Image 1 (cartoon, rainbow, N blue to C red):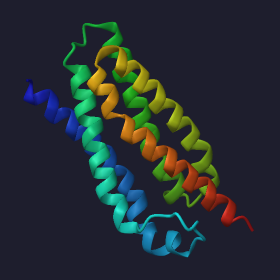
Image 2: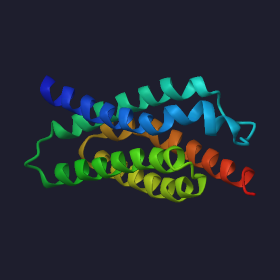
Image 3: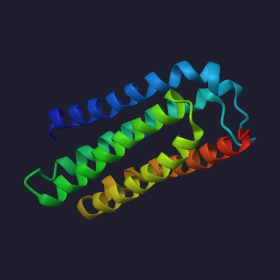
Image 4: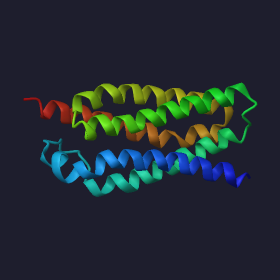
Length: 157
């Protein structure tokens, strides 16, 4: 086990989490609280523990792939896809919460979902465990996409 790679993986993932939260946190009690939301919308307190768990799973998943060696072209491609989806993850927070745009969030979350799926496919080729660790993430983003589109529709005026 290479603890440095594990720590770097955790730091990178949680840096994305922190950046995303800079857009999200200030807007939850203000703008987001005023939006019409569907009945299946989870309580606000659930998002932080859910995302913390998902970012930890992402970090471990990336670490498992990275451990296969950057000399391997497939590893570099897989980690590149991982970084793209991580950037798209932050971008969604910036668009939905930062710009207060469910429309831009809805458009972007489709790209995010596709990038996560591609990352899962690449990760499965390198490490089955790494691929499986990303399944809760794509399931949560699928739910988030449904929620995003519902908020968009319920707030069209």
